[in-house]
Image 1 (cartoon, rainbow, N blue to C red):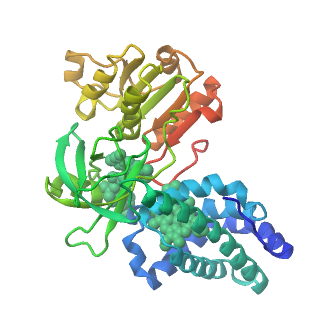
Image 2 (tube, helix red, strand yellow):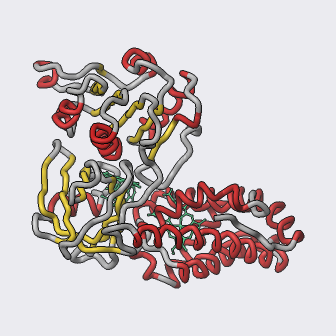
Image 3 (tube, helix red, strand yellow):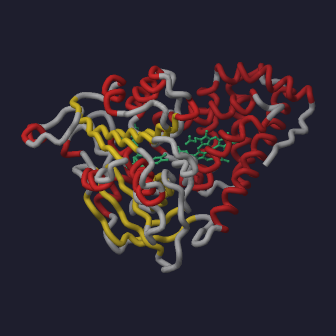
Length: 411
Ligand SMILES: Cc1cc2nc3c(=O)[nH]c(=O)nc-3n(C[C@H](O)[C@H](O)[C@H](O)COP(=O)(O)OP(=O)(O)OC[C@H]3O[C@@H](n4cnc5c(N)ncnc54)[C@H](O)[C@@H]3O)c2cc1C
Ligand code: HEM
């Protein structure tokens, strides 16, 4: 699609000149925005992740998107790739066009609240017009994504009921769920690396909870497999709601509601370049799907899979990867941060400690490859910086965040 913005030049000027002011107050404005919006529309708590709210992660993600859009208000085409990425997430959450004015109204109220007298009528009117222009780009992109998802063979638009047909423990902390549609009909294929949203009504909880889970097997098997890490409680954090519910209560025969597969972190099967997968912990899931797909679709394409885990107890999918590594074109290396005594008795890991550039260079045959990585944010920062230091060009670096997208260049 292309976007045409018919905003008045004066509006554009006001929006561009006030964007830096909003940027300075960004988190304050978005924090206020959520307070106002949830108090007027508590039903939206059914779709927003409460933990992200509490930790301010979503605030930062939304704020960053609004400034980016404002900076490009006279050339919104430039933000289309970002809008598409967010649009995938919105589509998987079931966000609707009629919800955009609600967000717009409360964003403007928050701007007024935080900026006070500096938010003149002229400024507010300009931002109202700008928001409408930005929202219409999102709505259009998302309409295309909904239509695409529904038009696919076996596809659907919103949420669909799936039965847990098998539950398999993959490690001390990761469990897989094999899911088949309750209606017994076909399910759409997906691109390796894509995720589904799972919507749960948990007994005793006021609101529904939606979380994303990457599909961890190759497409085309008649089921979807998700693999979930239990986010256990620690001294300073409560237990994760959905992951613990799935581990403790979702049993074979139970029904989960799923969105159609979404996401733009996908393996490019049109390329023949060597490919390197680097995963940390449960970040293995989208990369494992890619590795399985590679085995079927491009079995001779050279691939290296590096996996970092704390130790053998929490190391999932070792057997699946060892089987994939029986192909001469596929190598698999393991890094344990702190191997247990048991790990040391039967050493089956290649490196001890954390992943670093020196080790990567010793096990990755060439930097002229496409790199795909996923894991905890600190791990992703290490990998990203190592790849940059090695001189891997940005267009060969691909990654996924298991939460709102962040910035890997910042500490
Ligand atoms: C694209 C994508 C793909 C993903 N794929 C996978 C996957 O394949 N496998 C997988 O396991 N996960 C995956 N995730 C992550 C998953 O969506 C969930 O975020 C994860 O399961 C945690 O959900 P939860 O409900 O258990 O925890 P939540 O209840 O959402 O809590 C999240 C974290 O915040 C902490 N927390 C909650 N409240 C507070 C508070 N007040 N103060 C401080 N900390 C707090 C919790 O302790 C927990 O660690 C993916 C995410 C994305 C975006
Ligand atoms: C132009 C307006 C909007 C912008 C710029 C915007 C921006 C964003 C961004 C940047 C993210 C994080 C994406 C990621 O990296 O994961 C996000 C997520 C999300 N958005 Fe929007 N959004 C807009 C409108 C809406 C609307 C109308 C709704 C519905 C009321 C909505 C609901 C959500 C939800 C529920 C999430 C996931 C949040 C979470 O789970 O923490 N957004 N949005």
